[in-house]
Image (cartoon, rainbow, N blue to C red; front, side, top):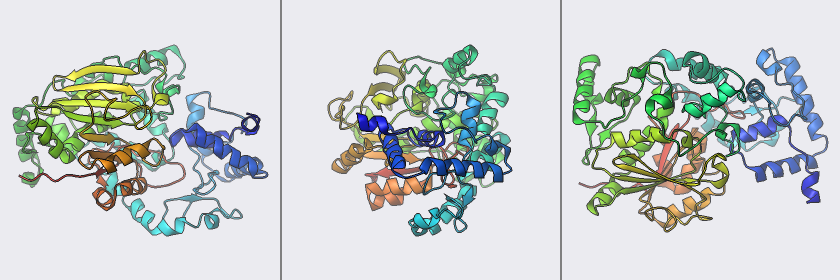
Length: 495
């Protein structure tokens, strides 16, 4: 106890960076202890911040010269300014200098020797250069109107202020006032956009404060947009919808045959772009639905692209396809938006979906950590609190028994020890398909490698990634929510 009491709190910029990259109190404490063992560490960090502030002309970075005694930003503006500090890949101190070879990593300038000490970067520098050059491809969303272009600008790589401005002043779906005001509290309770900013750093965090997973919302209430034509109808997709969408593609595009919406052997529409989805759901290109749509559409894409074998087997046995979604966090705020998956599937395709939520990630205001609901006539959802291999045995403790598929969105399999059992389970159950997404290509490649060579080769750009560049503070790699997708135990369907 005395040892723990002697460990100082880390600097506020470091604590904030840790929250942006999966809050883990144990790791944070270990990091603070390591910093305490290094003489004059805190003083050096203070000097770095002062030097950065005096040498950089960017007014936003000048705002970051705050006291290291401050534990946490008290307002959204303070949090936003802290988020705009980019960090050295080696020491995690403030730095604005990119690696000259790859432009993918930040390192401290001389006289600090961070680039030399972080020599391992040289082993992957050429690869990171390739990842950085992929930014234009990842930032291209041909069918969407210009509304998303400001969300892909350079300033979005180090700050959420542009996205905050878009949600607040252009869409009008978030309150511009202080997060703790009464109006903001009401606003957060009513919209699906409330958890779009500042991550999900645990069930007691501001992002989770007003989330009630069991509360049902219509699409109209959830999106809270003034123009209802920007929101899909809450109904099943029909063959007529596919016919109408293809008619428009034939009339409005060049080489339309390659862009038509087909269906697979199970009757599922084959969607491979936001254009397919928007046309099928009669959404205009100016609709911002893709910002939130990345979650249900990635899930649908995983089922249609990688789940055809388990789905076929389930239908032959006259049982629903059982899907476990592990590591659920902000999705708890827009549960009813996942009806969209059921609406895109044929009505006769039955899905039993279970969300596994870590205990510390469950919103504190939730009345129960075991929730069941019927999302659509063909999709049932159960939400349970726990961890695979610890408090939960997926073969017995999850509704409906063992899964046919395990899915994790923005998983980051290296981020938590709790993913170890998921990976181990997939290794020991080759008949269970695992589909995961990650923010950037470096993380995706490393995590996919846990599934072996075939999983590593399966890594690809997710066509349903969010059309918005996300900040990442110690790297300059292109980062998107659900940016890359890969599969463990991929199964081939033979006709």
